[in-house]
Length: 149
Image (cartoon, rainbow, N blue to C red; front, side):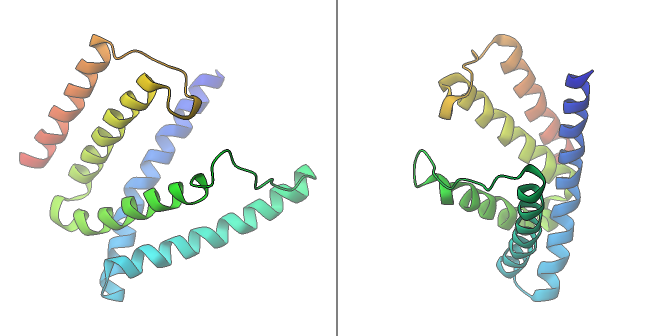
């Protein structure tokens, strides 16, 4: 039952990303610059996360520790997120919401298969099986069908 709930949470999170791209695109139109929309989006998200961290610190009674295994981890996630949000804002008017999400999921799946294969940053190593390759090809085929039909 727990695995089902985690899976549903993943689906919900993916659905929220589908809303984020057009919302940020509209913000970009209003501001006249996609990069400014990404900036505003990150500022809003940062504020929410600061408040949530403060609440969780109070609830748990412990403060976060800012000791990381490597200094680049402090900026890598934000950098990757900034690229993702900015390119999504620029691509959604050109591809449409469904095609953009399909291509994003395809890219995520292909990169994730590679990261699983090499055990990136301590991930459990998972082989690239025929089933996984076929699933990726089906997703890529679906993305292309969504975009070009």
